Length: 294
View 1 (cartoon, rainbow, N blue to C red):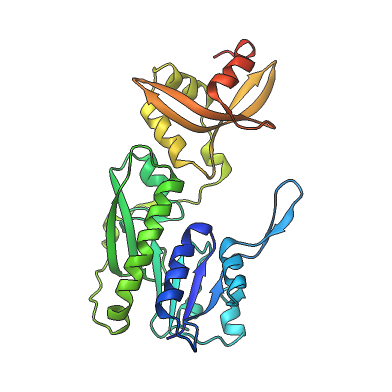
View 2: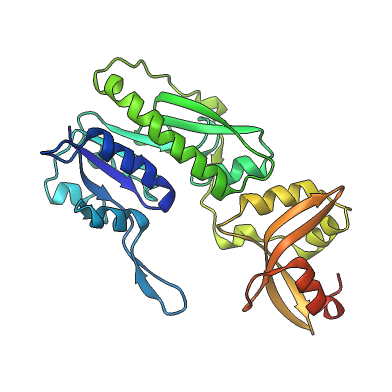
């Protein structure tokens, strides 16, 4: 069996690693290629940075491509594709390359929370649980038939980072267990009910903004501190929850990295002022309380 893996961030590597360990043989590699996002300039020095999946594959001498269309151009032949947080829509002509299709690991209980930010959406909405759906990719967004699905409790202190990590680690075990029956055609998939579908959008920096008046009201216990606290957890680590604050008549961004609830008030744990290193909320108040109308 030959597999092509589509993925980019660190948190999907457990899936790629599980496929290798389960299906590689002494003579042949099961995962013959990865498709991942092209290297991007990052940081103040704009250094070219390769994705975690790119680095993982390079160290293990797995072929690397930065566009799914390269599979057609290079004549790559594989039985199955596995996709987890790749970051781009796969065109129909690429889907058709795989006799066994492409399995998509999507971190929500589909058809709820289709799209690019399902984990953020579930935490921000105050859901008690979420999960993962393994579907067969088709030409619509997170629309394919469901081959497996499991639930996961959302803990009261879960951030997108912690919850997403658990979801994809469990997904690796579920996928490996599913594969033999899937490849043998022994699983009867379940169609999604499109009438129940909800959608999410890709989270950008602007989506982490909290108006300062709303943040101040949450700090004082006057307006939905629970909603703000969930939002901060949902936005961590990306795109990050932030507001704008005036210090000596200069407007600056302030990131709220961590926070908790005390009674009916929001209490930040850690914040980061624009151009500064992260500090505790107490340190921040000690330094700026006289300059900020908190």
